Every structure is written in structure tokens, then in C-alpha cells.
Image (cartoon, rainbow, N blue to C red):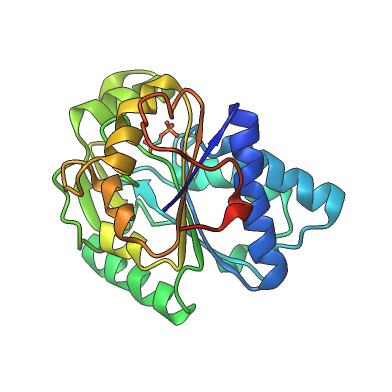
Length: 254
Ligand code: PGA
């Protein structure tokens, strides 16, 4: 794993954007795995800037999002569909036909999950997957205890995750109880991973993910087994790490 510690959230976001842009310039039809949440917002802002000012071209890109709440229609302002269009897709030249976000309103959720897995394979697999991390070590909605070999499926959200996300809803009860999420095994199939984390509230999770034992109790720790994973964190999120780490993606020492 290449751990990169940056001074600030802004520097963390720009570092990740440089990797995404590099891969996209090398492969215009990149298959990009995307994440929601507050962490990747700076990355998306920088990608939008690169599109507008440097002509970064997304016209041939295919995307797959990690997860979506069950029961929220795409137009709901807390759905991950809505989030992705508001914060990235509508600002770049992506082709809507190439965008995939799990369908929270799917009538047959299991059949949808199988289709999502098949569709990723048909597109050649995810080239580069962006990940956030929960304070409890989750990746996507793979909560502690999730099978490290799991595939796209329905998951029950933990109380902590629902509380963490309650800030986006009018009341805590409104936070959906279930989600469709790529599995840990699905995420590990991506050819490259970028795990992002900022803020002191993520320091314990980053310590467990990067330097702790590989355990289902910290699903993010599985990325220690990935051939090409970057963990890009700001100073606050790195506070509990004890190893010596890099300051640039160009060091390429996994
Ligand atoms: P956050 O969420 O980016 O809003 O902190 C990350 C996550 O829960 O995966």
C-alpha cells in the first residue's frame, strides 16, 4: 500500500485528482469506481476544475458507484444518485448512459445486485476505485463484520453509520436502514484503489486500516492485501500512524 500524508484536505484532494487524471489521460475509456460522502467532495471539485480549465475529458468514462440507500428515489436530495449528479456528473462531460449507481428503488434487490456485478465485468472491471472510510472502518456500506469476500448485496446499516449520516436528514429516523453496497470482494477486484480520509475523527479508523491486523471488524484493513492501493490522508487523519510514509504518489513504492 502506498500511504501518502498531505498537509491539508485540499492537498489530499489534489493528490488524488492527479492520479485520476493521469489514469484517464492514459486510458480515455477508464472505468471509474466512485464514492459519496463528504470526503471525496474536494477530489470532485478538482476534477471539475481540470475538466473546465484543462479539458480533462470524461466522454468515454464509465462509472460505478459503491452504494445507494434502499428506498430513496434518484431525485431524493439525500440519494447517492442525486449527490453524484450535483457534485460531479452535471459539471463534466460524462455520458449519462455510462453512469451506474445502484438502484435504491429496485423491486428485486438481489437480481439488481447480480446485474450490477455482471455489468462491471462486461465493462472490463473497475480500473480505479475511490473509497472513503467510516469512523468504524467501513468501506462503502460494508460495516464491521462484513465478509471480506462479499459481493454487491443488501446490507443493514449500523446504528453508528445511521447516526453519522443523520446530519443530512431532517430527523435521525429518516436515515434509511438498508443499503445496496458493493461487497468487500467486489472492491478488491478493482485494479487500483484510492482510500481517502481527512479529519481527526478518522485517525483511529486509518490506524486500524493501515497498520492494524486484517480483520472483518475493520473492513478497510483488507486493502493491505491489494496489489495497488493508495491511502491518501491529511495530517489529522494520519495522527495515529507510526510508520514512515510518502508525500507524493510519484514515489510508486507499494
Ligand atoms: P464521509 O463518509 O466521507 O462523509 O466521512 C465516509 C464513509 O462513511 O465511507
